[in-house]
Amino acid sequence: MFRTLIFMLVLLSGLSCDKGTETLPGFDMFFQEEFIIPVGISQFEVHHFQFENLTSNYDKYLDQHHKTDEEITSIVTRKAGITGIYGDANLDFIDQVSIRVYDPAAPNDYVEIAYRYPVPLDPGNNLPIIPSLADAKRFMSKPRFAIDVVLWLRYITDQESEVRFDLQMTATL
Image (tube, rainbow, N blue to C red):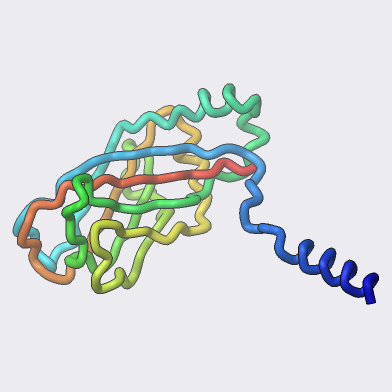
């Protein structure tokens, strides 16, 4: 009986390990941009908020983690989101979001790195965006790149919203 009890205790303690906190080999790259969603923009148009000439710091990340460009197989989105800066933004007017990364010299050549469709009806002040599995290494490994935050709206905005776009990319080995 005592052996059975010890066996069950060992078995249950092994099953309760937190296996979701394993880190991927490689390193994370963080980006943050603030912008204003103005009053009165229409729901019948697609709205682009473009951030050009962003510094990737890719070479610094490689040096910091003692890696080479050849060792990095891909750069994918780990986490993305839009949040009101002062905690008072109501992002319920957003219907769909697409986050695209591109080279400023060729803006029609882009990769969608995150999206959200449909956006919940009442996201409040924080709108998490779903990462895609697209590899953005060809853009993020250059010294400069650009991001396009594309919004489709449900209705005309009735107040100005100061928001922050947060992006976490993972360079994998």
